[in-house]
Amino acid sequence: MSLPLYFGWFLLSPVQNKVRCTSMDFLKTLDTLEAFKKYLTDFTGKPEKEVDLEQYFQAKGPLHCTTKFCNYGKAEGAKEYAENPAVKEFYSSVFELSLSALFVTPRTVGARVSLTEEQLLLWPADAETEVEPATSLPLGSRAHVTLGCAEGVEPVQTGLDLLQILALQQEGQQPETVEEMELGSLTYYGEGRWWLKLREPICSPACFSSFYG
Ligand code: 2AM
Figure (cartoon, rainbow, N blue to C red):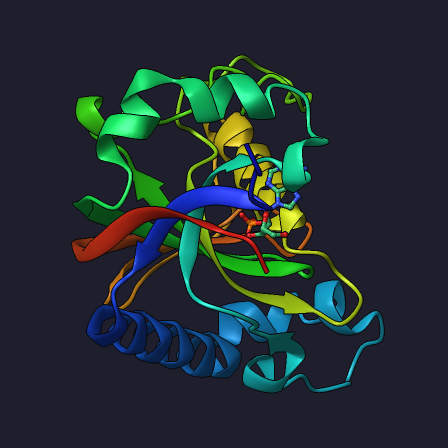
């Protein structure tokens, strides 16, 4: 059996455009907020320097939510995942993913995916525990769509950034800034970490499949 680079849900074309536009609108608006400008050095390293977030992040490849990174069979648990009956049964089925929040850090921009019980059947048990968040987070917490990465940053970072923010939320850290935007409420968790809880989650049809590259 030849194993892929990764399994995941691939957003269907029309919704990919919608998500890209929403992400661009968010970055454009974030850039202009006084609250963001106050913490600009998180991104620039220097005061007074400006940043164009739309240029700062680069997006590559199809928008997707990785379930299992297999690295062509070299990743731990890859073969077991591919043999999971749910993976076989649902392969090439279309699901409705719910994108419930957008987040930005100096490294990545992404969308949080809130998984249903059925979707969790395709979620690997070790996705959250293979990294080391400060607290134990529920299964599926790492589910996300990478929307862009800063120069020199690998997409795997997006899920790690998401887990870090969720761990802060679980610990009850009070966000420093709260701003109501048209898309939802925006909070700041320090060190350049911005979280936008969407007023209306984006419902995205996505096909469960794999990517060989
Ligand atoms: P992503 O899911 O955050 O976008 C190919 O590199 C894909 O596999 C990317 O989508 C990437 O991140 C994901 N990926 C790469 N390395 C990974 C890892 N060690 N664990 C989980 N996902 C990984």
